[in-house]
Image (cartoon, rainbow over all chains, first blue to last red):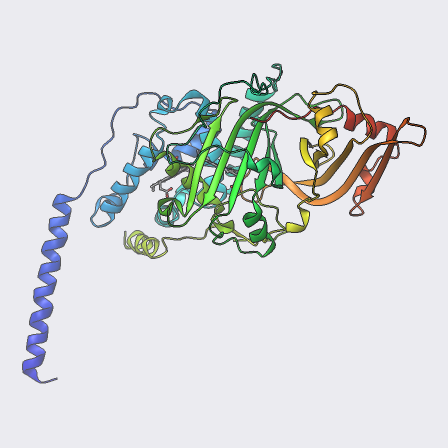
Length: 323
Length: 152
């Protein structure tokens, strides 16, 4: 390098450094602030549970964010502020009752499973805040908490008389409109002739389910082509409320609860990993969701099954857990 | 302070962290397939750690669905039983594991026009011995007592 060149080089360096410095300071001035709105309806639980959640989750999922100094320096502050905003939108321990009562229990199970899968607290966050990590022993405390909570809520079982389908058998009943989800997926009966790919029970939330796959889905399982699943693969889950356990421990399906559908079409359902979601509730098959965005909440949770193409309930061989 | 900054920078680089990954591969051999058989109902049992689906042909289904209260010759039921295991992808859900047994109950008309009930069990693995009952009457009663699940 000639001396002239060297000079130019160091000039350039000085200029870029000052630009960076100005940008850095500018960023500090414009840096987003995480503010703490008032706590309106605090989440209540046993002390050993809330202390874990406060330490590990409240910085993002509550109005009691207590950010460290380095979280307040740009560019980190931009990331942190965005995370807090998104996290509060998903659920907020300080506005707990904004979650409908019958969904609060499900949300807690969701949390436990997000921690179990290593997705929460956000790994990038725990790397800088190791004290926010949830230990295996603490996870067990949370698992026991949700299990007991659900037991208390569901031990009654479904003692209600099982409702039969009314009126549909009569041939002169007026043809009803086919219930259709807001994204255009209609309810259909075909799955009753498909193969059952798995059968599941959730003793804790008191439901029994059967999962059906169409021929494309079954073939995909046979050929181990499920990541991604081929277009046209369709999976239907039928959910019943469980009856009381009998003397021998058998749990039978009681009232029909809902049908849920996943249809693979990577063009039509690009925004939700190529899966079209639909859910129909009760014997009158009332569709879930009034806007297209309902499916975002379906796929968000199904991300936990990304390993198996976003489908949880496939039969699997014995496996070894890797970390 | 520098330590924290270094940690933070490190954190930013390892955004993906260490998500748990399982080594899951499909087990299509556990899927039951027999043409002409429809789902009647299903059951799970945490004590015996089994999960079962009861299938039936048209005649069996119309009995279990209570369209026809009495049994008739020609009914055929198959009770398929798997082991029960926790779903590796979701704490709180139990899913069927390997296939254990298929029990068949058939009502056949004998030469004199009277009906006879046949019971048979096909074991699919050694575990089955534990649950396969020797008392076939008990199993027939159990299967006959099942009511069809309500579908929309």
